[in-house]
Image (cartoon, rainbow over all chains, first blue to last red; front, side):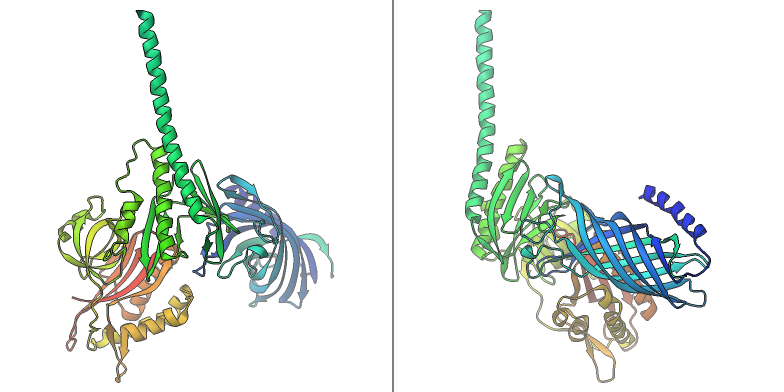
Length: 206
Length: 384
């Protein structure tokens, strides 16, 4: 965790110092991130329980389209290692969101949207040790390969610089394989992701 | 002569080795027999919407298979196998203070699993056979382990007419013995022989002692892990009623209603609002709104559950918020406050005012269920 923090801090400073002062119409950015993952498990109709959190990481590309001074749209493709205690899965996520910056100085903003994810690989710790996940929808699979949900963004923009985003991604899909699904049981992923954006020095719309 | 002595010693050594090996084999075969018995019992047995699909025992792992998942019980970590009768149904709970089984359906480890979808007869048999495996495993792996009571003997006790595996909140018991291992032994030992009210007790694995929470007096309640009690009678049926207690009941009524509509509702998502809705609980059980707009308290047992099975983080959060609300709304600081992992509570003594017929005390108690590891939150009014 500390190592990840140490790695992320210089990246953040680099990003803030190198970002353009001019406000572009659209941007393609690199988006490194850290996340805290968890899972909500409903068993037998009881209240959902969760596992212990675990820190994960990710990197991706994001396209940002500005619509006026305050509103912007994002579309991304990211590789995220999203895990929790005893489990780690790499997802290819595609989030889309609409965001708005608030106040005179447009320092803070918020947004919302949706994401879809596809599990690429993963492992979990069973009584037999670390085991590779089998993704699919049959009774012999561990979990569904796909995931989707909604996301909420809280955005901070350093004046004249660029964005850091806290995204809360909450799964809507039961990731239990279809053949194993039962009434009163479900598993849904929850992820909180802190990311920054670094422009790829290509201002597309200007 | 020397040769004879050496030969005798060698033969003696061989014999003793074979006896030791034989004893080990006997233990191992008893375990295998117990596993085979359990396997036969569970063969194709329906369980809710699923079926048992065989068992396997390898080392410390007892794998119970279902059609679509399996449970791996770690026999060396299981601490308790308990049979209880809850809401008219027998259930078997296998638990430990740490993770003791793995659920492949969720790829998660858990501390406790309750088997509640078996018929009464099957539940008893399940308890007996699972317990036998545990006993045989412990005998095979721990030379010092002695069976004090077999699971057959425990089953006979637990299912005997009149025996209560669960003593509900509000019931009155006679304390027979307080175990010296109780953390609050010094405070509790004087209770031996007296009658007390309980906040809920559940029989322990030994089929003799109970764990849960007891009420020592109007102020003090204790979490206990192994006390011997005799059940006397349940919650008194007479309706407990306090005539309008002046400002306090009115303020408390409004405050709790406000909390029910705000903090508590957001903190505690109820699965069945009709049954567990706080407004319902509060307006119909605790308070009676009088024609003059004030509230009087009414409650048959003076105790109510806000929520069962609350996780520690939720309990900590709610505990903080309740404290703040009571300070903001009623201007009250607690007379006594505990914020420990296993016991959290506030006590507010409300000073009597002219016209009040009773002195009222408000108690919020967060009680950790030792068996499940979850908290229960109770609101209690008492007289003093």
